[in-house]
Image 1 (cartoon, protein in one colour):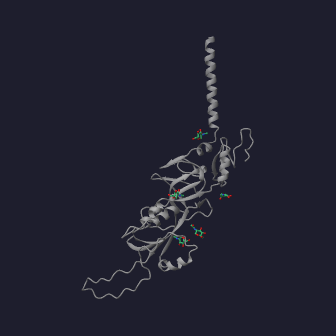
Image 2 (cartoon, protein in one colour):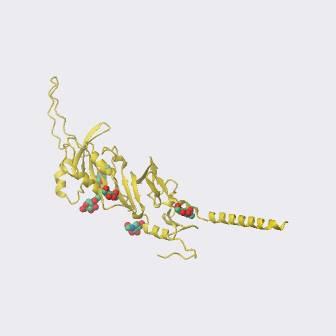
Image 3 (cartoon, rainbow, N blue to C red):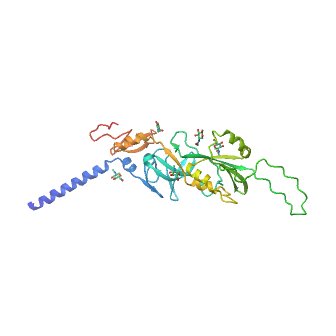
Length: 305
Ligand SMILES: *[C@@H]1O[C@H](CO)[C@@H](O)[C@H](O)[C@H]1NC(C)=O
Ligand SMILES: *[C@@H]1O[C@H](CO)[C@@H](O)[C@H](O)[C@H]1NC(C)=O
Ligand SMILES: *[C@@H]1O[C@H](CO)[C@@H](O)[C@H](O)[C@H]1NC(C)=O
Ligand SMILES: *[C@@H]1O[C@H](CO)[C@@H](O)[C@H](O)[C@H]1NC(C)=O
Ligand SMILES: *[C@@H]1O[C@H](CO)[C@@H](O)[C@H](O)[C@H]1NC(C)=O
């Protein structure tokens, strides 16, 4: 063996050792940690991480109830079986801005569902969110009698209907008209929370009493206020409730609680927040394995908070 070859072989052995070592080190990072370290983007929303999951983030990287479906470049979330478009996420404040896609354009939705939050308290309305009451399938005013056809025998007078599809009633109560599946009906919407206004309820109950369905929606308070202040264009302001639909399209705020404080502690210790779908508990994924709340420090001591 030529002595000049020795340093080369030695170098080769070291490289091989380092490569094997590096491979061992890389594969020792827990897969769940690696997967939950990823964020995803959908449409305009970037950096979607915990508590959300979906796309290439498996369910164990998020919290149950926080699945986002990316559809037509909109992130969608389903709360109490109702679909919402996610318009924005503010991770640092745990805020979500959502809107109902079924009220885009006008109020004449075919399926009528309330905006209801889950009873477990995963979401809460932000203080600038207010409720909107919509009343559907209210009776139409009677048609005017046909007087221009002389050969028609006289029709019996139509009995007066108690409910009239009236015009602008006041700044809080307005009407709209829908034609859904060939049926035309009046609708009303009310941009005030009725609790605490018993006199007002008594005044309007005659109009609303026989409406077939009531739907409670949520809207951004300042959007509703500016809609109320805007003078209505005449003669036909927003026949299908387009004004309100525009305000609804801006979305409303939700605050989330998905084991927020546990997640803060987990992140503080260098872990990735997640959820153990077997034990149904929060999980903190660390580079070696999952822990209940926090990652151990390199010396094996748990970080205390
Ligand atoms: C986790 O993600 C960050 C930022 O995307 C990246 O810098 C880091 O290398 C990732 N860590 C691991 C272990 O993949
Ligand atoms: C919406 O909620 C209100 C109040 O709880 C209820 O009266 C109404 O029937 C609900 N509407 C629908 C469509 O479920
Ligand atoms: C409506 O008002 C009542 C009482 O003032 C309050 O308890 C309730 O939370 C309000 N609802 C909304 C959606 O603001
Ligand atoms: C409500 O609308 C106002 C004014 O446009 C905006 O500043 C605020 O961020 C909105 N709130 C939410 C929760 O979207
Ligand atoms: C968040 O939820 C947890 C239980 O899941 C509860 O203990 C905690 O008080 C909630 N925090 C807030 C701010 O509601």
